[in-house]
Length: 194
Image (cartoon, rainbow, N blue to C red; front, side):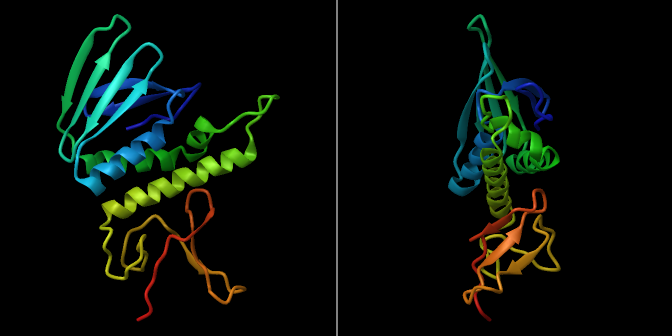
């Protein structure tokens, strides 16, 4: 769905429609949130992108997508794509996974020397992983039998690679290790004792 971002631009592909998106918008986060909202609210979601002279309004629904394009001459075109939002969601998660570092740089702040602010970069990376996990959770049935928000066991196919406990704390805070950036993400699990 999204190409590897380079020089502040990424290509977006939805079915047989393609466009270019600018760093002006936080593209992956906007799309992750839109897809999550479509599934959680069961209603269409509209996102807008400013492509520096071209504007896109994309309407995501459960079963199809409509893209309205305004070109440099204020001319409008409409494209209707019969593509399942679940398929798009999985493509998006995979594209973010494949280019996680580049997407984290997409919105990271730079200092006066032109270097990326490492703290903000890490925050961007964590937020992307958290948003991907939330979307995958709702795609994988948010009402899992074990009661956890992001289910993980030996029989499931999931993106988490490890569940660990903080043995130094009496409360045993539960956390997972993100398979993409190795960040410990707390507060995701909500297990019930059997």
